[in-house]
Structures are given as structure tokens and as C-alpha cells.
Length: 241
Image (tube, rainbow, N blue to C red; front, side):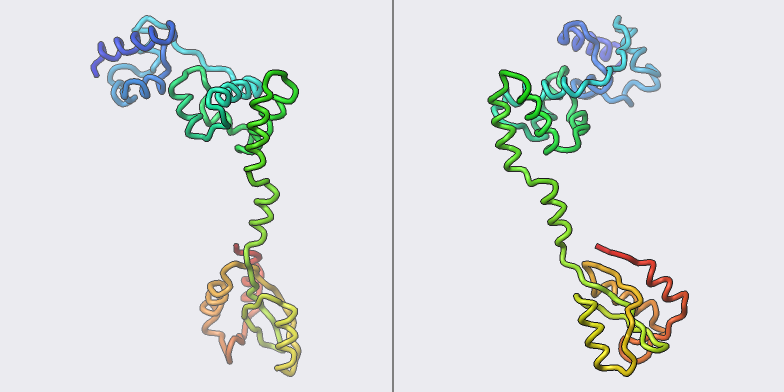
């Protein structure tokens, strides 16, 4: 588009919006005209284009309050007859300039907390019993955050350990440090002492890494002649999941 075509499109959209000039991003969405199509060879600022079209530059919008966001969300719930998914919020924002962007709703801290906030608002405000019922139903379907954390903590892990017996060190892996120590105590003259262990969901990979790193210091089996610096390096690893 050339200069005149862009100005005509600004005027057309402003007329459709009741006299409100479109913002730069709204204009691009509605017309497909990118910023690179007019900047910097025609205008240096979008406000300059609006002024040339006969409109005052758009003022920065003030932050929408949580209550207004919740009321907008409730309106969409009523419109759909269900709690919306993010795609429906995005579509509503594109088609309705008065509806907040989906990113603004992220201030509540996620879908579960947003639904909880809407439910709390409906409980103290009459006339939203239908929306409250939908929120309660949706909350039951969402996995609780605590349950999510508990599942994360139940990832199967084992230990890559560093044990010392006399002047030598053993690097191995086990799912029970206590049991492994007892097993080794039966087999070797000097009972081993656990120096450090690394909890990991990839015990094979982590063990192989340390075996390769200390390959030049390896003796029989998994026994190594390590220096104090080597031991310090091993102890810097805590948990790898």
C-alpha cells in the first residue's frame, strides 16, 4: 500500500470503530499492512500516520483492573456457555477491540487460579450462579497444583555415589545407598564410607560421565585413585533430574 491507501484504511477502520483510530497492531491485524510497509520511509511514528489521517494519536491504555478482567471473562463464559480455552480468548480479543488480550489474563498465575478468582467473584456477586457452577465444574476437572508437584517429585531417580575405602574411591550407581554400602562392606576389607551422592533420573549416563572423566585414574573395576580436586568436582553435583 502507498501513503494514500494506508490513510484511507485508517479512516475506514476508525469509522467502523465509532471514530476511534486503530492502534498499530490492530491496524496490521485488520489490513495485513506491516510496520515495514510504512516505517521509516513514510512515517517515523504511527502517531504521525494517525495525525495525517485526521485523528489524535492513541493514548497508552491504563492497566485494566482485576475486577474488570473478571467481568470480561464472565461475559465470555456466558457467551460460550462454558469456561473458554485460550484459543477462544485469543479469538474474542481479535474480534472485539474492547476485550483484553489473552496475555493480560496471565497475571492471575495460570488457568486454575484464574478460574478460582472468577468463582470467588461470582460467590460474592449475585446473578452469576450459572457461571459459578461452570467454574466449579471446571475446577474439579483441573489437576490441583499440589498434585502436579507431587507427581513431579515421584519421578524415578537413583543415585550415583562416590565411596572411599582406604586410599581408593569407588564410583557406582544404586537405588539404595544404605544397602549398597552394606553389600560392599561384606566384600572388601575396609568398609567403605559414602563421600557424596548425586540423585538423578539418568544414573547410567551420569555414572558413565564420571567414569570417562576419571578414566586415566581408574584401577580395578569401578575403583579410582582420585585427588582432592577430583573429589571436590564430584561433590559439586547435587541433583540432576
